[in-house]
Picture 1 (cartoon, rainbow, N blue to C red):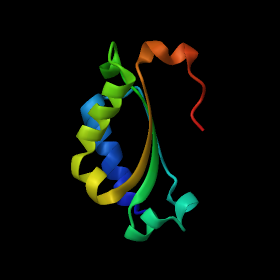
Picture 2 (cartoon, rainbow, N blue to C red):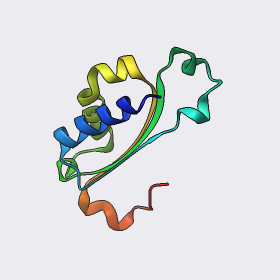
Picture 3 (spheres, rainbow, N blue to C red):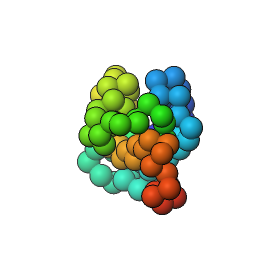
Length: 97
């Protein structure tokens, strides 16, 4: 997928959630023969740590991220894996690969 999609995702998440940690991976190459890849949309993985997620359920965090990405979800992303954590949860979290 285009680097511009990665940059757009990063800019939006940085602005919306002011994360302590944000890692985004383009995994489209792993899905190059899948039906969804024919559309040119990408497969991405997001690891984000932000105080915005304090006292918010995992489902609500995912909804917040999907909502913030808006048109990018519809036009540029075929699949998205999200690992979203509050900063105080980090002691129990394994490293993002």
